[in-house]
Image 1 (cartoon, rainbow, N blue to C red):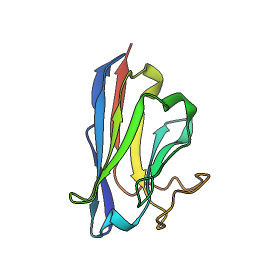
Image 2 (cartoon, one colour):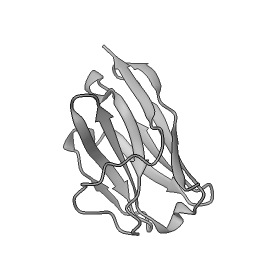
Image 3 (cartoon, rainbow, N blue to C red):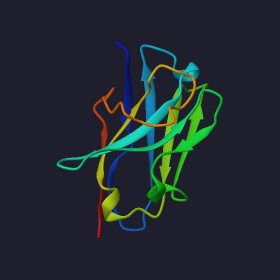
Image 4 (tube, helix red, strand yellow):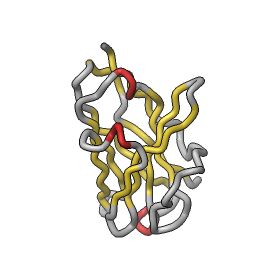
Amino acid sequence: QVQLVESGGGLVQTGGSLRLSCAASGFTSDYYAIYWFRQVPGKGSEGLVCISSSGSKLFYEDSVKGRFTISRDNAADTVDLEMHSLKPEDSAVYYCATQGSGACPQELTDFRPWGQGTQVTVSS
């Protein structure tokens, strides 16, 4: 089964850090751009950041620039999202996904989850 499996979420205090991981299952993600987005019930989906197959990064959300870092480990077939200085408004279910291309899309419109997501809750 082709899917992306997110992990690493949890409950942290404001100002804390978390590292989320996205692992490919059933395919090799090395050739594809992988992006992270988040969903809050009642607020829809928000694209965050993407990393291309060559390692180029593209941020879609200004509020996470300087706080979130995306990286990929092709040997492990994972893409990580390192989050620092977390705020209560970062609380959401976080997903990783791909559109099947090596390049990051200039605009994110596809927010279909590939996995179950991982819950991040930031307490005030």
